[in-house]
Length: 87
Image 1 (cartoon, rainbow, N blue to C red):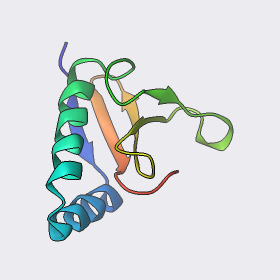
Image 2 (image 1 turned 90 degrees about the vertical axis):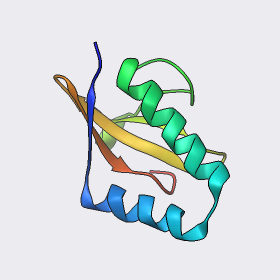
Image 3 (image 1 turned 180 degrees about the vertical axis):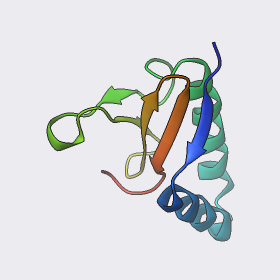
């Protein structure tokens, strides 16, 4: 089953931030993580992790040591919350 991906306004701002930096390494990593998430949202690359406490119901994947993709899954849609920072 392939999941569709939708971005929040914040996630779109974060993606545009990465595009402006011309950091192809991070952009390629984000694209790779998103493609993997579409197939297996709870396992795979980027060390998927279920978040806890006030972020219960959300998941994260590592872009690099500093930045994470934060997302939630509802039925067959993945909602990307952010693409920058560390929750």
